[in-house]
Amino acid sequence: MKTLLLGTAALALSTGMALAQQDTVRLGTEGAYPPYNFLNDDGEVAGFERELGDELCARAELTCEWVTNEWDSIIPNLQSGNYDVIIAGMSITDERDEVIDFTQPYTQPDPSSFAAMGDVDLEGGVIAAQTGTIQASHVASMDGATLVEFATPEETAAAVRNGEADAVLADKAFLVPLVENSEMQFVGEDVLLGGGIGMGLRDSDDELTEQFDAAIQSMKDDGTLNELIEKWLPESATF
Amino acid sequence: MTTGKHLAFYGSFGTVLLLLAITAPTALMFGLGGAVAARSRIPPLRMIGKTYIAIVRGVPDIAFFLFFVIALDQGIEYLRHQIVCPDWTQPIRQGTEFAVCAAAKTPSGNAPQWMHEVYGFAIAIVTFAIVFGAFAANVLFGAMMAVPKAQLETAAAYGLSRAQTFRRIVVPQMWVYALPGLSNLWMVLIKATPLLFLLGIEDIVYWARELGGTKTPGFTDYPHGDWRMWYFLALLIFYLALTRVSEVVLDRLMTRLTAGQAVAR
Image (cartoon, rainbow over all chains, first blue to last red; front, side):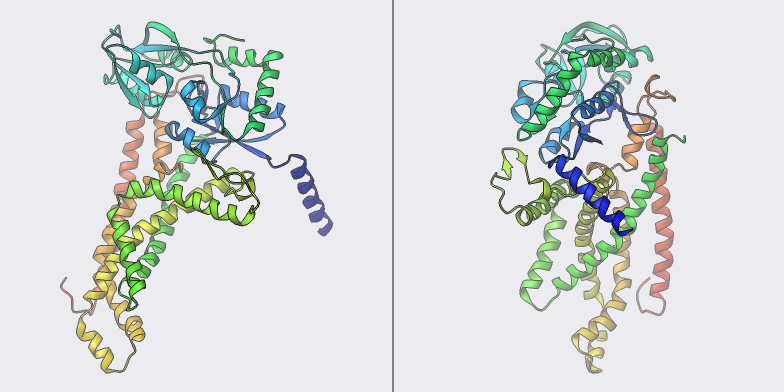
């Protein structure tokens, strides 16, 4: 028994040293934005980014753990160290790049679409978007349109259904299943926003950023990333 | 109704009850401590007690919750950082980042997720206890004052010391004066539990919102529309039931405590 304990301790120690100080990497996501990330029936994180993140961690030889966090505090909680990586459908923008670091994008700039209950005039209409997203800043910059913000993606769609907003602007991949299964329909033209989706890390975590960068690159090179994109985000362009 | 997610939802009712079960006695201890400090004969102690009551009572709960949880978490990490990594050269605050050495992370970055959840829950309990402790302190302070002077004089006449008087005369009798205030506080505490949601703990409000949200086929085996209203209705009934049961129990307790005492009923 004693040797067994000692053996386990020695093993734990040696693996601990082999992996240096970063053993477990905590991946923070929102868990409310299908198909990118959502909670499945078992209450676990699932979706495009779940499969992608697990694969990236395997390639970078990291042990990863999934954590969910509200969207509006997702950057502050990364900075205060509650988790190490944001992988939550976050598009790379200049404003965000000032406060955190991004890996290279793992999707092309995604089309965002407007969805509404009928034919509405987007000029001068009331448009719902999630707080702190590129879609929200896009609506704010549209002439004549009024922006209403909500904390969760769910609420933006609900606002359109109950008439509070005329249309919702969100990533097309998120809206497609909603449009297929409700009376909502796409209106207007799609818009291309942001510089693709990347993983967000603390400015001080350069080493980890490089590890994930390399892992994403290797998935791009062997085509596995494209397979994942085609499976989960059929509307998006591949690499 | 029996998916893993639903089980987590049912389990979160337990989380709320557990929070109540731990917070109530802890808050009472804080309250007792605060009240004793506030009526202490030693001026600095009295100052501390009164300041505690005044500050916490004067700040809105939500502001205090948002501030205190972050402050407590960073404070613990800062202290551990100073102890564990004395030769760390980089500044802890780098712009908006709060970076302590890996060994000082609380709980450790390698800890399994449940440790993080327990830690978050513990911080929530401490915060609840501090907030509600201040209100309880005020109630108990008043209750101690309300114990009839004649009782204290009689105790002194029998030669009891101040400490003995406090233990044997004041504390047993104060409960009856404190109970209306404390039961009120208990009700407020029950109603304040959804604040857990604000602290990022997956409580019943979190799961009700998550489960009630629109589910489209492809992402779940049980698609449905926007059912949040019904889930929140269930929460409403749960809280009403909880407060109703509390009222009945507290009424009984009041009857028992007042038995044989000369107080207006």
